[in-house]
Length: 80
Image (cartoon, rainbow, N blue to C red):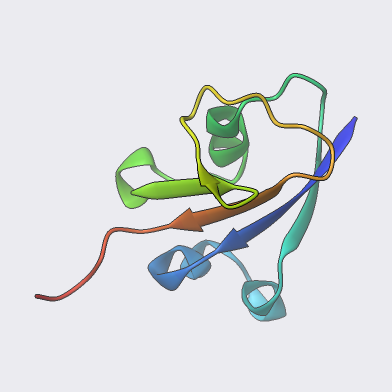
């Protein structure tokens, strides 16, 4: 098992409950979990995600997560 910190931004915080939205989630996943699988496990629709960073670098959904990774997930910008 690995542990990753996940931080959701903007409208994505609506997928969390209560005070979970104000702090990173520490999530345990099995080894060889991809970033896409992590997002699926959080029930975040693909169309609601525009950028995912892992340890500060943009990564594709096929990225294999490692123990201790920090994942930042951003929605599309709103407004104009």
